[in-house]
Length: 459
Ligand code: AMP
Image (cartoon, rainbow, N blue to C red; front, side, top):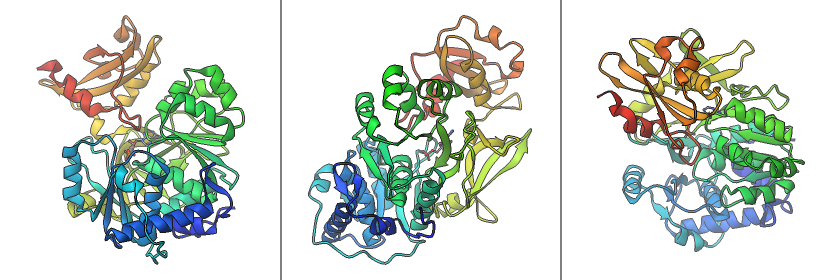
């Protein structure tokens, strides 16, 4: 049974059976507690204290994951950095965050000291700082309190029926909320285990899966596994749950996965600033194209709706406290009553399931009319021969913005096929075929890159 009253993620480590595995065949909960105290001692030996930022740019490893818990142990602020960041980008983060200590793989390998005792911590104290993907403007540091980590982990463990017998297949990166917090805290809250893979590799996933019960992934994990339907059917036989998030899961992927494995992928919606906001209930229905219901204790509302579609706002114990040294941006995204403006557009269906229509900044306004890329993408994706598409707005002298569709696949006359399905003002003014769409490590299509590449279409 999950105890939702826990107020701190470290309580889960103390409460777990020390003889059970945290990382399968690698580390028990007893080892975990000891390793965290020793690595935290290493941080202290390097002059790190409560409230200090600990920046880390490291490859995925058990120690890289533990660094998050080491920081919690002494009240320091964990600041993981995407392994893909360049020196110029790192220089920006270091100047902005002023970390007391920077952890590389070499530093991590030698990080140990006399074991230190766990510091008492305020649930509102900042536990971590994650820079948001920032597809426009400069990345901002989201300040995440301990309370948000504890409440989201406990809620998800209960909602998704985790028990100490679960084994999570962990193939996500650990510099992003999904692999770092959603996966880890759900496992810790239940005293469960992880099969911890260094990265997503189809062969490694198929090898590990028969000994696992749950997988959390981004949609690209599922499309890649589906390229090997027979191996997938066999490997998934004893799994009890597949979860997807971080980017939209196509209805086709959901259907193909269900046909191949008998499992309806459970989709949830979250972001760096809020962790998880909504999820399909374990008991279902797990409707493709929607991201479920607000989590227990979390409120979700739609504001400024036009024909039902509006801005998604959330509030609850899962929220971050603000952007680092940026009170203006923090205030800009808050509304009275504790609401946070997610920047996503959506609507509720008749049964109260949230549908995400896209990012507010991806909304196209052409000839004064609002056009939601997702609607056009869905219509194009449904055509025979089309694998996927991304619809963007590019500057246009007459219309303000023009709709451009970037398409993966093969189709002789997309516009003719859209006749009768989409109003003419939504039709792409230009269609470009490409071999694949640019995605980041979390599987999100990088529309900013597409806009840069194709914005000259109407000059
Ligand atoms: P990040 O802060 O990098 O995790 O990005 C968060 C954004 O990812 C959200 O604001 C959504 O736009 C998108 N996102 C996350 N989960 C989903 C989902 N299940 N379906 C569609 N978009 C999602």
